[in-house]
Image 1 (cartoon, rainbow, N blue to C red):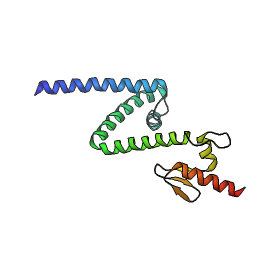
Image 2 (cartoon, rainbow, N blue to C red; image 1 turned 45 degrees about the horizontal axis):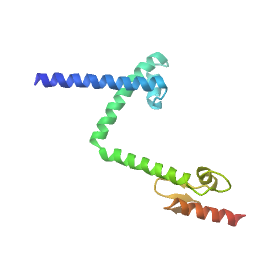
Image 3 (cartoon, rainbow, N blue to C red; image 1 turned 90 degrees about the vertical axis):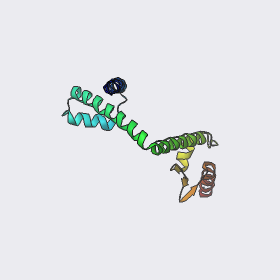
Image 4 (spheres, rainbow, N blue to C red; image 1 turned 60 degrees about the vertical axis):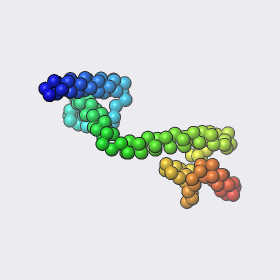
Amino acid sequence: MFKRFKRSAAANRLLEESLYNQALTELESGEMRGGLWAKALVNASGDEQKARGLYLRYRVQAMIDEAEVAERFPERIHDRIDKKTTQEETRSKVEKAIPFEGITGEELIKKLGITYDSEYYYYSKYKYKKLQEAISYARLDTQRDK
């Protein structure tokens, strides 16, 4: 039993070292999590050197917490992945939108005032399941106004 505990403690130390390395890489590249950096600065009374050390500690703990949440509540992680996939599919649809007055699909969506909430596309007070339907109606509506 004591050997198993020793092995487990050794594995945890190696994992922790790896997490600190990842946190340090993020810190050095400037790709920090804003909330954690703010917390570190506050707790370091504005001293950036101390804040860097605190940030590393907070970031490692955040990674440990994220892993635990993912293990306990996998459905929430899958919901995030599904939502991200939906956003990527939407971006693809926007990029393929028929050009209008020589502008890109994304510019067209913005110009027409179409929004998306991960389920429906909205134009004016109407909602649509398909992007092309929202674009078609918005174009019709703007042509009527001319």
